[in-house]
Length: 150
Image 1 (tube, helix red, strand yellow):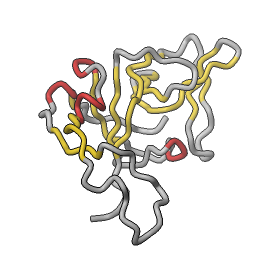
Image 2 (cartoon, one colour):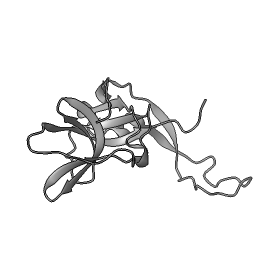
Image 3 (cartoon, rainbow, N blue to C red):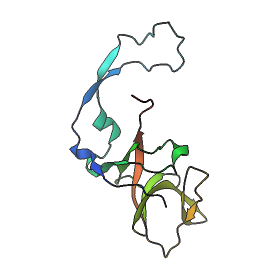
Image 4 (tube, one colour):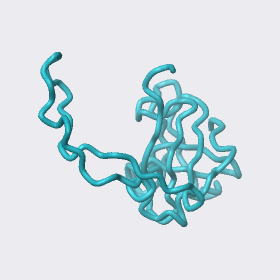
């Protein structure tokens, strides 16, 4: 398993910050140089904590380390929102504790047995035997990462 979580930050402790929200979706492919019809159409402010955290009291932020989930869009240094109130199901990206170690992987059920599957071909899937202590700590609901260097 790859190392993953060091510090959890409770979402309930984050300061609510409202940001302006465009009232119209912004097309990804609008021709360059032509003004968007969404210009000057702002909607009500968007509270990111309400948008990102359905269950703030049971949602935590954690920083990703390692590259085992890059195929799912989780890169080293990204922040993930982990909701402990969401029930994990087949295909969920979860924070799991296996033999006392945290990891982030995709949960898959194969013939009734849970597997933790990386999204990077360099890491083999791991079958979780009954004798191994597996605890699904929470379900990853959002990822926050920077797109460009600043």
